[in-house]
Length: 496
Image (cartoon, rainbow, N blue to C red):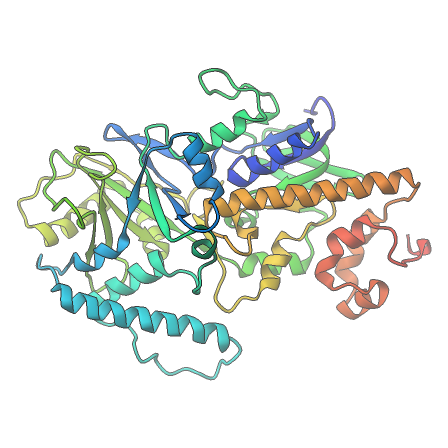
């Protein structure tokens, strides 16, 4: 089935980056934008669900980076929407570390261990960055965590507080405060509010604009010198001059979408180098609360012999008083393990851990909610994480356009990858780059210049880096936009 007409731009994905990209395009006069979203809603990894009588955030849950010299754009949207949030202070968790017998480690002991772990983590991250090329070091690091408490602290540091090399750009630019979203409208209401600015929306907040097309799973992107054709799994065909591809890095790695002709090897190699983090929040509803509450008690830690085994807990009393909900966060390997088992098994494991901490007489949970971001073929993970040993060229290659295909998403943000504001800002940057290319395109057409795009899609795969540089004076990563779309690179017409 054919689409009714050709569009200027197709945006694939209606998460934070896709929506911000589309908004910029419409605000700059590109009204014939089509947004294709695979799921039945907008938001991407910003997703709420009703659980235990309240709205809980399955994906992004915090606005990270508040109180600094610059205003975080997501925090700005939150203020405009009067979004209800609660300040989060993870630092108190280190004083609430339970062993398997239910005893809390003395605060002094925990503080000393925590400081040692922080110092060790900082040094390890710095060493990884400085000595990435030195593969001769095989000896065990001097401060490798071994005891349950050390493993729990290590998990808390690396999976919560220090996943990035300091100084952390988000904290430098926007501040170090973090706020948990605790609003019945959900975190996603910020994206719906943004959509209202350029998409027809009812007074009840439902998007009516036909330019947004839900349940459209993109199967193939065909690209040439004259435009792009997008084919969806339900057989629809959409044509446009350009595509903005805002799917997650996990989806790119999963090959859900095929490209004709295929992406060049330098692009696919860069995509594969990015780590995909899986971050799972398991929600448990109880008939009444049996855990400590009050100042400094929101977060607590379970010390187990297995790193990351139901380690980091949060009670929701601060966010939703009287909700009687606990949340435990797991990541990566444990996330994948738990996604593969039944919710009943996960509930049993969770209750065993809670009874270790609070005794055998606590009540059973009356409900459980287990998100499955890794199994979701439209997400394939929670967020991107570039290895410490990666250089900026990897990100540059991932976000570099391929002819008329422009890549965006939090994974294309050099400074803020992994954050909602990273995706939001990446979408804006990508659309601004595309608008500049469209302006140049118009200039070339008005000057009577022809494209050299289609033959060069194959040419760039066969050229060596030396040949490319000799032909155009460009690095290979500069080829996609500058070589495909610009006819002034000294390549004779005879080769066409």
